[in-house]
Length: 477
Image (cartoon, rainbow, N blue to C red; front, side, top):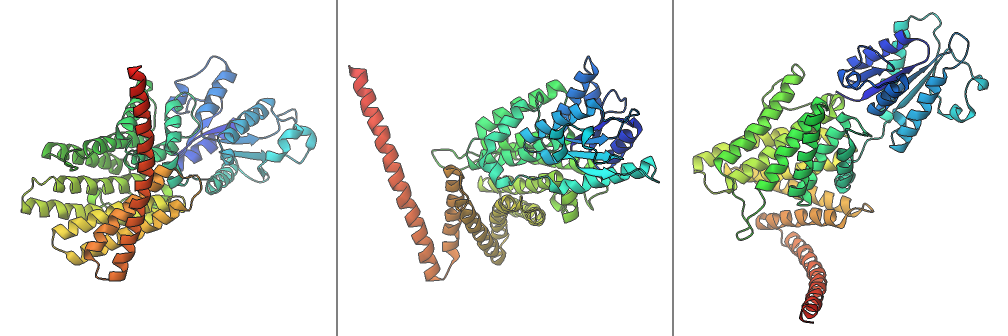
């Protein structure tokens, strides 16, 4: 389910209903302004005292708006619809989504006396009803509405990863004063959970997701996408908490029961998604589920959800294998499972990376996928494939490091994370590289990084020591 769309009308309620029905068929949820019995239950359940209060509530709950301007019987423009136009225009401009307001002038000439002067600049599409049925007009409106969806600016997911606290802000106020659809927030949550890994904020983000889920259950609100995203994010952040290395040994332990719990959880979410979207995909088996570019265009959330689940399952399997408790036969079995999931994740992420706003984030997930596939192929004795994926991971990590360092206002901690990921992968390549010059280049990069870290750590330690000395001196006085 995509955005909730408010359909405002000034003369012809029947046309507004036809528009609602058509956009519903295209995955949106239409809300006809006023007391309409076929509006979604979430909207009808919160019916307000007056008509004005009801419509204000409806506009606040919707993510886009279609306003149908027609002259009334006395040859005027409805003052109520002009009010709705001003209200929504202010609301969407405030949230940076002004392109989500779609205005249609039906049989209205350029008569400047019909509208307040401040409103002339935001008129949208002019339509004529000559020789057309109501169904014809509704189709014209919805065709233009669907065409304009490509003009809505989408968020770059690396920028979202950088500004992940903005997602927390949206989560906190989503059910009281939302500024985005459930569908858009669900997509953002998929990126937000990855921030827990990049910034090592597992425990904090876990608490925030639990609070959001409790509020969603309490209010009995939220789309299926939002529920899927929240369940998946909560499970994955729990996995990140479980796999924090033990400080004494810097290793990660994963027992069989925990492994099965996480794997069953992921497969359950994947099965729920596949059941809901039955008939769209050739298989419902998560490890073999490969999507298409067209599928991605139709359901960006679903494609990213499946690809991320597959990638995180490769991480889960790798952690389980590294626990050192499996016999060789079982190790090979799970490595082969990891290859199935990894190859499917790779294909899906390569499709997602074709969208400009998703490209670098998809490449980040591909880096993890390549590295995990390298380990799995090594376990099953395919050294050639293992080295191929290890080199592919390094190449992508360098691309990401250079990209991140070239963006102004990126948080230093995120730059540090991408640099470390690249250098750690470079260490793995040095072990299998036979080109002395390439090895020397990597070693020099690592040496320069360590020297810079040594200087910054020394400065930080100096300040901590200074604080400690002054503190102890105050205690003695």
